[in-house]
Image (cartoon, rainbow, N blue to C red):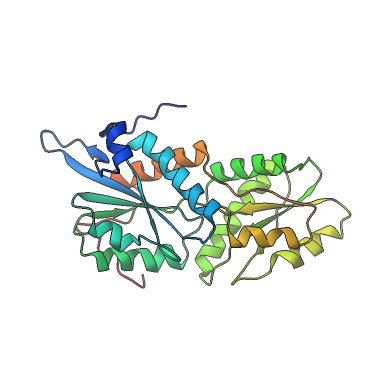
Length: 272
């Protein structure tokens, strides 16, 4: 595993602390005044046991790099971000494990920060899009049997937020750059075009069609893809070391005030 050195960050808390679930986290070095900061990985939430396990495994990978990282969910199950923050006596940094900045990132998470009453929170940029995720998607396609020359449709969850859909298109371009051709996007819910119609349109070219899953974890959305007419469906991104590295990069940028949503009390206005 690659060793990561993040400026002004160092690990705290041993294995026993992590096993006991103690929120020791990591610290920012401020001369003799060390501010303990607790990382919280924020995911959507799912009823799928495999999906929940995947998010937990990803949090463990992040914990190996920056110290204990707890998990919160914005939907389906808890704890919610506001509940996790209410149980955090130290400074906190929220890490959105979302592949685009849709409603949950732009509205729900800031609302949870406000509701928590916590006065020292930073909100990192969302996980995707990023070229690293395209590399992981390509690996998942190859594992599903994809070969150069096969067509690819990228399946994404969908959003009512145009800016989130634009970010999904960016993710598809990153993947297209790797495989050497345009990758069309199909949405599983909310947005259009839907995955089945995109698969049907691509199939007219007479090639095998593979679905690249622009989804973080297994769950209802991924389970639907097997019925959408492709020759094979790649696995979700999953708990991958490279994704954990990317989340750590998001934390480092947030702590350094680069591309993050932060302020004296992280007062992110709901509706921005």
